[in-house]
Image (cartoon, rainbow, N blue to C red; front, side, top):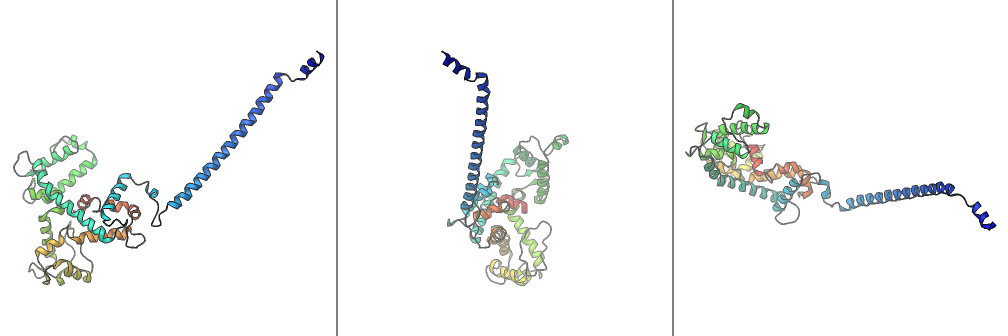
Length: 335
C-alpha cells in the first residue's frame, strides 16, 4: 500500500492540469483557424486568377465578350439583338450597309403603312362629342388624358392642371403646337387628313406636297414648275424654312449625280412634281441608305464594312433612337 500512496502523491492535482489543457486547446484552435483562413485565401486567389484567364479566353476574336455589356438594360440588349437578327437575312452574324439599309427601309414602310391604316380607326374613336366628322381639341385632349390615366379635359381647372406632372404638361404643350400646324381650315378642329398630319406628319401626303412646293419655290429659278439638274445642283440654295426637314447633298457633283440617278426617273432632264414627291417620300430608299451609312460611320469601329453585334451594343444609344429600332419615335423627333 505504500507504493500506490506514493504514486498518487506524485500525480498533479486536477486544479493544476485544467488550465494547462485549456491553454493547449486554445493554441490548437488558433492554428486551425489560421490554416483554414490561409487555405481559403489561396483558393480564392486561384479562382480569381482562373476567372481572369477564363474571361480572356472567352473574348471573341471579333470583339469583347458579352459580359462587357452586362450594365446595359436587358430590354435594350433584347431590342438590339432582335433587330440585328432580323436585319441579318443571310445569318452570317454581321450586317453590311446594304442589309442595314434594306431593313431600315422595311421598318419605315411598315410604320407609315400602319399609321395610315390606324388613322381612321382612332379618328372615329375620338370623334363622338358630337360625331360630326371632325376631331376637336377638346375631344382629343380628353382622349389623350384618359390614355394617361388622368381624368380631365382641356377645360380642367388651373389648380388641377398645375398638379399634373411636368412631362405631361410638356406633352400637352407640344401637342398643341403640332395641332396648330396641322389645322389648316379651323384651329379648333381637324379633318381626317389633318389628323394624320398631326399624329404622323411623315405619313401625310399633304405634308409631302407642301414640301415639294417649298423645294420648287427655292430651286425653280425660271418658275416652270420643273427642276433641271442645274437648278437642283445650286448649292447656295438650301434653306427650306424653319421646321422643313429635307436631306440634300452638300456639293454640286453629289447633287448632279443624285438628280440623274435618283430623281429624274424618266431621264428627260427635268423633275416634275410627281418625281419630286417620290423623292421626298420617307419610303424612298435614299433615306434608309443615308441613315444606314451614318450608323456604319459611327459604329463600325474597325472600318471593315461589317457591323458586328458587339459594335452595335457599344453604340446602343444611337441604334435605339434610330429608325432601325424605334422608327416612330425617330420620325416624331424629326418632324
